[in-house]
Length: 77
Image (cartoon, rainbow, N blue to C red; front, top):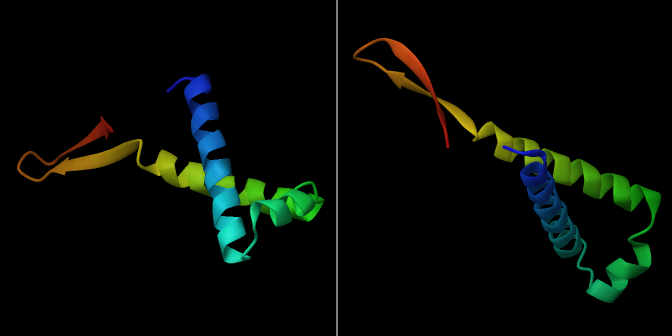
C-alpha cells in the first residue's frame, strides 16, 4: 500500500474517531468546534485514530493455513 493510501485511510480513521468522540460525549458539531483545539482532545482523537488504523492494518495480511499441505500462506486482502 502506498503512503498516499495510508494517509487517506488514517484521515478516515481520524474522522471516525471524531464521530465516536462526539457520540460518546453527546456533543453537537458546534460544541465539538469549541473544544476541538484543546490539547487533550487532540491527543485522545489521535490515539483513537491510530488504534483504528492499526486494527485495519492487522487485516491487510492474514495467514491462511492449508491443513492438507501443512503450509502457511500469507494472502493480501
